[in-house]
Length: 289
Ligand code: OGA
Ligand code: MN
Image (cartoon, rainbow, N blue to C red; front, side, top):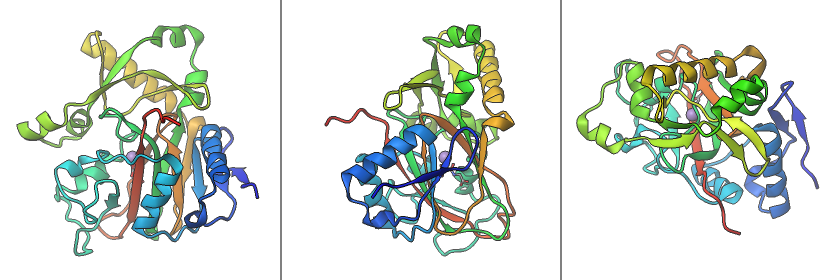
């Protein structure tokens, strides 16, 4: 049986045929899913009634190595006690909505900036698998942009000027932009990482801009000029034509390739409605066969 994918946006993103990923063990089928991710970069699987363990297990079948440093959970333990399962929720351990000044909200609020998961560490994130457990009765979308299409549509002179540039990514930088404060110990623990500004996604061979709100500066450039270039590129990449907006239904599992996309959460009445999602992310390392 081959799995079919239906495009849901003119340039990327698809919805998969009905399938229960808990039962997908077949390497051919897993290869098809990876191939589809190379092509579409974002894939929606509806009606995935996965437990936490099933979510973690499927992730390891898809890409073997789990990422454990994708959020600020190094500072606050999450509800599941497993750093490989991110608690993307606006409720605390007792299931109560978090207060506006709860420091744990920082992760959710910070997710409203365009970003690519775990770019502030090395290795960064490859695939992210975000599962919608409790979905509010109002729109609370996640938006995605196709960074390969954004790269392809740059002027060729601009594209050439980006060759070889390296970018420093830091979660302290992106959170400080929003006004969050960190202790010296936290700053020492979250030093950031350097990645190329343009990457080739090896499996698809396509070139892609690798940007994020975490991108703090361009190595060896004057700070203001580097920041202006990063701003220009983010502005370009987030043009309407590159955006897919995901409207959540309960039990949606959205899988995306962090090397080829950026994403962000959109605001909603989070002091009124619960929203509980869970995310796994895989390590972007070369796999030995
Ligand atoms: C994430 C994320 C967006 C959202 O979990 O990495 O960015 O809409 N989530 O919750
Ligand atoms: Mn994210």
